[in-house]
Length: 242
Ligand code: PEP
Image (tube, rainbow, N blue to C red; front, side, top):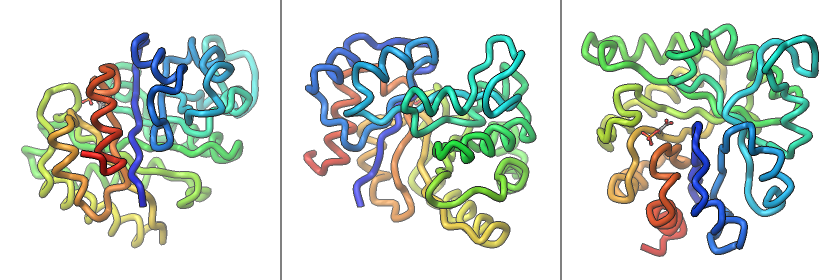
């Protein structure tokens, strides 16, 4: 089973990376890109047939349309050939006060449109230090996952907040332990066996180490997905070329 690399460009447009994707100089078979919504339409038209697209967000307010200024719906994403969508990223939880209830609604809308939700969960440093990691992960899973979740439409991204953008990647042991815990909760509470990816300061060397984790379906990267040479290395690791 080949792993996937999900590149979250956040509020950036990496021109060099995009140029290489557009000109088919990158093997995109195992790549999902998450561009800013402002570029989705252009990117969908230009490369939507050879690279999988994810939105970074979807509105919780309506599945289709309505008087919701500034929002983008699941139907609109589907029309842009977005087959994936990030949900519950910690930056949105922290800076935009996104709640678990909002996230659950978003995932339901995505599922209605057959868009796979990539649900981000993870503990903060304070929660980790207070021994609350399991509590936080359990609460996020229980409160965010709708009944419509299945292994065809939902991926869980374990993204410890203390690792995102800090250059501190979780250790292989920490990731394995978190994955075992998440899998156990998913089975106990939902009878689900979902794909799990890890996100948080992943580099080619940390990816090489963690790739042996049996439950790891792939990685979600922020800064590494903006740099052409690093992204290419990550994709080579997936293809077992390194
Ligand atoms: C992220 O924001 O989801 C992320 C993983 O970022 P970074 O790789 O930069 O830590």
